[in-house]
Image 1 (cartoon, helix red, strand yellow):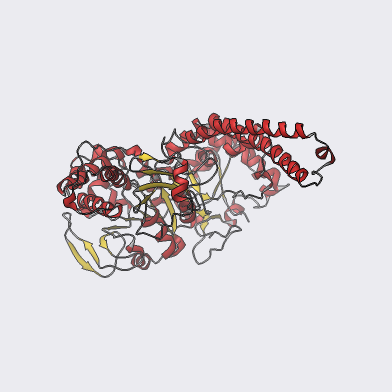
Image 2 (cartoon, one colour):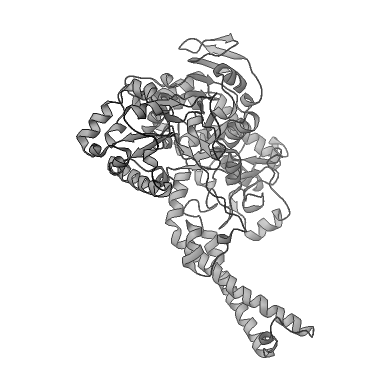
Length: 626
């Protein structure tokens, strides 16, 4: 029996106006292989259209296909649930005079090759992007842990910087302005300071004890650091942090920049460190250390957020702060029509949520739909991350002006405040890995829903688009840098062998080989001197090139995802650990469809045979860049 549905002909891909498709695995078969299935006359456009009309909505949903339910689902060879897979009914094939095995005559490798080529051709003719090609674009969805989207019953979304993306310069700039105004009222010297968003990037860590901002690699070793607004030299970084690891569990010292909301806070803190070092902070404020200064900055920014002036300004002019994304509502509409139950779970209050979602969604939705029509449940003032760990009182929002009343159970279609993730699971009768949660905050959204509930997770990181483009434009620089490093490795290997030969000679022992033992003393010494000079000159060339690597993304900190030429950043390690998939924006789901099977890529290990580089820049260097 066939385990997938084959749409015969391109015209069948047109979705009727009111058709609701259940989650499916779809194999598209182009015109050429139709003869294999016993329909040689269906190659014409007219025949394809006639055949397609046989698939009305009811037939598609019930007579032709069956959907694997939770009770009948199994796990596939990658360990993913098969729930939501679409299966073709054998009796329907027989009604058309087809044997399910007819399409499988001959070696499956040959059939698969033919079908894959035909599928690519048909996708091109239809103007539909191939999901494989999307992985190699700034708008791709990247997979850390294999995820079958068909098996997901509910998708929860955060709002700020997830469903609603803000212009960072505008939003964080105003947050900075209000925060600095609060610092001024507290007596801090802030005159002459301006918002500098390029001073920091997401994924950095504030050292509240030393007044530093640092970038750590995946192991926690500090690779770059800034004291105040001044970058520290490599030597200074080594002296300060050489024996120390960044440990995010020590919250009293380290503050991780999880989200773009952290930008204004980090800029304020770094600038005020300069003022503190200059002795400009008045003595009346007491003897402040860097940790005390951080508390003052956090308090000033917290007041900016909770006093309401900032959000009132944004609600009055949302078009000034929100970046429109017309494809975003359509992506969610596809998910809802595919049978996913959509949830909005945000820490923002009802009034702000309603205003932002109305602005971002309603003008792009068809048939006079509103943003509330997309969601089976909306929870505002959720108090994440506690929302994923414990239960808070639940209130139902019952009027358009936000009037609330206590309630004890959430229902589909409701709008609530507070509650808990466990309450959501109980209300929807779905649990754990049947729920995908999508957010922009590594800790508040992704890690907590993963650790405490085993929900599947997706991280939204808008900066990925700029980083992807920066990596593309830096290929020639990185290729030249890798070539120099490989040349130094060759020279260094020879130098080390000659050094060992000299060491053995001074101890009266033979060198590694007879030829090395017979080397003239002067020849050995001069060769080593020459090689040392070459390596020193290479170092002079390599060091500034390494420093410049990543400056197309950020001239101070380099790439978001990397800490050095080959190593991953601490942020990347967090993403890999907690996010099953990650991407730059929610609308990137649109071309992938709600039925996508995201498969994680092979993880290269140090002992993999292809990990070892040849000396040729056309070999490994090119592979590394890819």
